Length: 88
Image 1 (cartoon, rainbow, N blue to C red):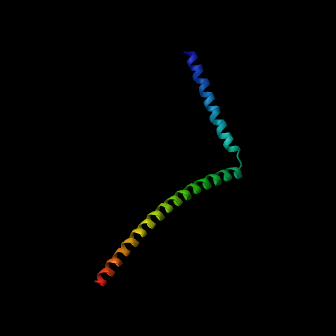
Image 2: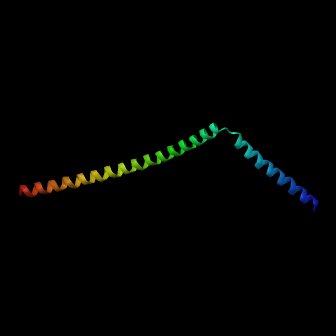
Image 3: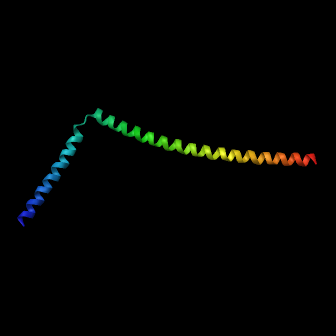
């Protein structure tokens, strides 16, 4: 029973020291470094959103151009029909 308590105590100590080490490491960063890290994170996030927006815009442009071609073809057919009816 005492071996289990010893192992649990050592494991708890290691976990606690690891947590304290991480907290101290984060606190060692200066405000300038934290600001730079946050700015880089925001820039990456913005680039990602901008790329998504660009892909969506390109997709919409393709859809609109194909719709425009269809409308042009329909208009040409109507004009040809009217011209053929007017010629008769």
